[in-house]
Length: 176
Image (cartoon, rainbow, N blue to C red):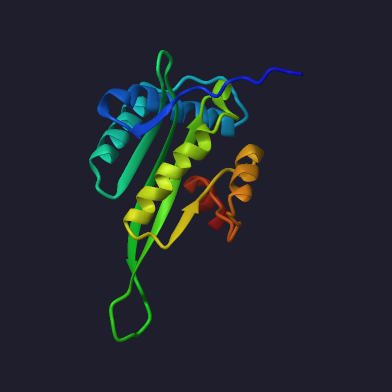
C-alpha cells in the first residue's frame, strides 16, 4: 500500500504590505507560466509598477488579495478578486446596480499543488465577493493555459466570449 503524502498545514489570510515582494514574484511566475515558461528577467520599472498596483489594491475596500501561508516555508500561493458595480442600462422603476466579482490572478507554487491550496484561496475570494453582493464571478485566463481551463471548468465556469488583444501599432498599420 502506497503511503499518502500529508496535506501541508497552510493557512489562508489577507495579504499585508510585507507580502508584496513575494506577490510580485508570484505574478511574474504566473506570467512566465502562461507564456510557456521562458526564462526572462522582470524590468525594475515593471517590478516597481506591480508593487505599487498591489500596494494600492491592499487599501481598496472593493479588492481582496489573499495568500496561502505555510509555517516554516512562507507564502505558497495567492489570489485576488475585485468587485465592480455597474448600473442597468434599461428603463425601470428602480435603479438596479449589478455587482460582478472579477477574479484576476491565482497562483499556487508547483510543489504545493494538489493539496487544496487553490480551492482554499478561491473559497476565500468567493466569500469576499458574496459579502459584497456580487451576482456573478468573471475571470479570464490564457487560452494556452490548459491547467487553468481544466480547473475553472470543473468549478462551473463556462466560456461566454472571446477576448482578443493586439498591439496598437499593429492595428494602426492594418488600418492604413
